[in-house]
Figure 1: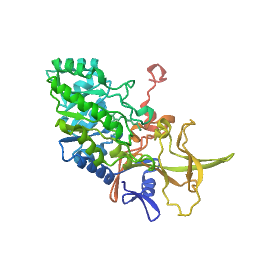
Figure 2 (figure 1 turned 90 degrees about the horizontal axis):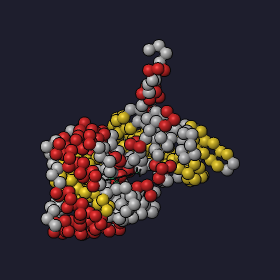
Figure 3 (figure 1 turned 30 degrees about the horizontal axis):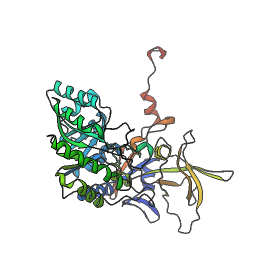
Figure 4 (figure 1 turned 120 degrees about the vertical axis):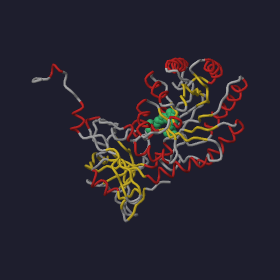
Length: 425
Ligand code: LLP
């Protein structure tokens, strides 16, 4: 469910017309709906309300400060994967006790910063990381709370690039070695074992792969406890998908997911840590751009817009489908014709949609790329020296620019000539 609808013939985010934002901010821009973010967090959190749990929003999906502020004010914890994301959490004064730290390549510096902030748990992904973390913690006179990310060798059946829980994927410690590595962890002076952790992939729309992986986790927790290792929580990773298409990719409701978690893991009496990103932010954002030209060549129609792959890379990187809606509501009997919606970047892979049936669009029309709130702006860049796309937060009838556009002048000013290139130093 989201809050993007046509009102008086114009697509709105809540009560604000996207055409009005385009007039005031220019295009392209991302617009997020506060009501949608709120609803998604609350529905997911409520699904687990009967059990001890902490929803740690995976900020990699959308880490704008305004989005993080909204979610953490509602009670969300955070899942971070870098020192930069920790800095975002600290800027909002999110207590360490509500932060978990995932990722395969934590540096000494990042470990120190996270220990210093007193984070709830490090999700450790390798034996060398475990040893290094123990040393860094000892140097600081601290003990690092740890879960080991276990790779359950389950194929989540999602896109190859975001399928993370198979043996050959770079993530976690193999299920076969997990018991041995936990014993090693328990003996390290700078480590305090707290839980177990897993993540099998993103944009997963069926429960079966989760259930298979959780079953393996339950068996592991029982064995660890028998070996005298206390396990307080199970971190379930993120990964429930969103309906990009709305046809064959409709995920189960959070209540069904939570009921399955309880069925498989309930007897363990553990706290659940869950790291959803996409399901909270995905439907809560759109990317709006303007048609520059409509070009027809040899039976092909290209809707050339100001939306580049640098603004939203998902279509070309993951062959992702995003609905495209004209901001001006098309007549109900408008004829549909096939077109490619492309951008101005000099690559054939620069498109938002290919071979899409669309109502008539003309130069100057606005289009909205739907379900772009997760992994959109965070993956945007300035390729082709295109301005960094701005972000807008809508709440009811109000909107605010929560990241301004970085224009060409500002981008150019980041470069410096080498001293020997400066003619008149
Ligand atoms: N926890 C961990 C350890 C993760 O690696 C991820 C996502 C999440 C949580 C959040 O997963 P979610 O609930 O959002 O499915 N850029 C890609 C998605 C990359 C996901 C990486 N890990 C895309 O645009 O589809």
